Length: 125
Image (cartoon, rainbow, N blue to C red; front, side, top):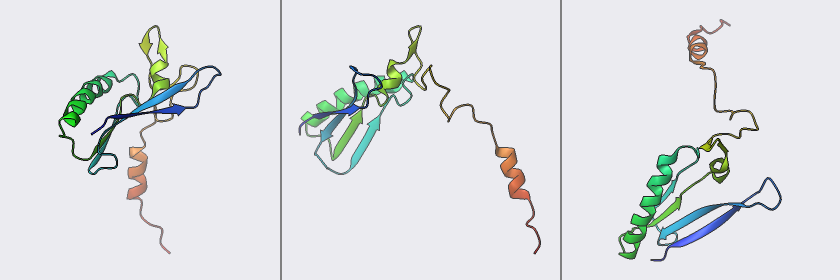
């Protein structure tokens, strides 16, 4: 089989800069079963980046030996923008320091409200 790497361009926020994703295709193109693996969606979560780095080498060896059934799609870092966000050398990864936190963070737990709603008796007709 042949290892194919695609570069997927992303929109840039400023002129003269470029960001992209790397997509590695291993195994038979369009083959089944198919697996998609990505790391670094939250760019400050480094272990996944390290694991896919080593897994890519192992998959390439397996592919050369004809041991990959189907196709594996591997994106080693899914958030290059977050990977570039640092404060004092520490990756921020989840949101930009110049904007409010991501909407999925800091949400109030509504479990008690939902439970009260579910336990209400229906209005009589």
